[in-house]
Amino acid sequence: GAGVSQSPSNKVTEKGKDVELRCDPISGHTALYWYRQSLGQGLEFLIYFQGNSAPDKSGLPSDRFSAERTGGSVSTLTIQRTQQEDSAVYLCASSVGLGNEQFFGPGTRLTVL
Amino acid sequence: AQKITQTQPGMFVQEKEAVTLDCTYDTSDQSYGLFWYKQPSSGEMIFLIYQGSYDEQNATEGRYSLNFQKARKSANLVISASQLGDSAMYFCAMRESSLTGANSKLTFGKGITLSVRP
Image (cartoon, rainbow over the protein chains, first blue to last red):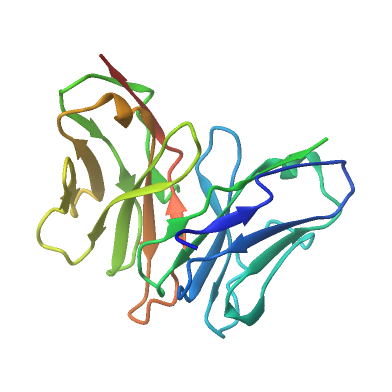
């Protein structure tokens, strides 16, 4: 596609359920990033992938959060046993490589009831 | 200490006038990059401008320019000839990186709301 796509655009879930958020980066982009934006706040880094290197997971807030990137393209962010404080917009970005401009997707708005 | 500081309250500017959005940063790296992104009410993050720490000249992109003062660790965004469509949240971000570019995540400030008045 022309840009980064994310699905679903909105997700409402009950506390304690698991959710999966998907990101399709721009074709050919080797780096993929996940950020979280709470209401009225800036973006908080979660994790990034670069090619076949081990991902930088330093921003994941707890072990309930995990992400994988299959085949160097699509990525899935999984949140297990969701909590209300997980409610936020989850943004995915990709770039041609490390150190380049990051192009953002439209985000997934997660609401945990 | 915060790495990116944006402390201005909501900003207002008259259409066609210029406005400066402040950003200060904190890093001990010699090589780093500074970014500005725009986030309209629709939620998408739109890249505006980039300044590398070794760039000698201030970056410019159309109506956007970055007033980079390295010694003061500031990277203010200047928008000239404001338009109604410029009303949005504006985020300053920094990428700290080694020579290998191994640390490429962006650290964002809390953002500034800009409202352009007709």
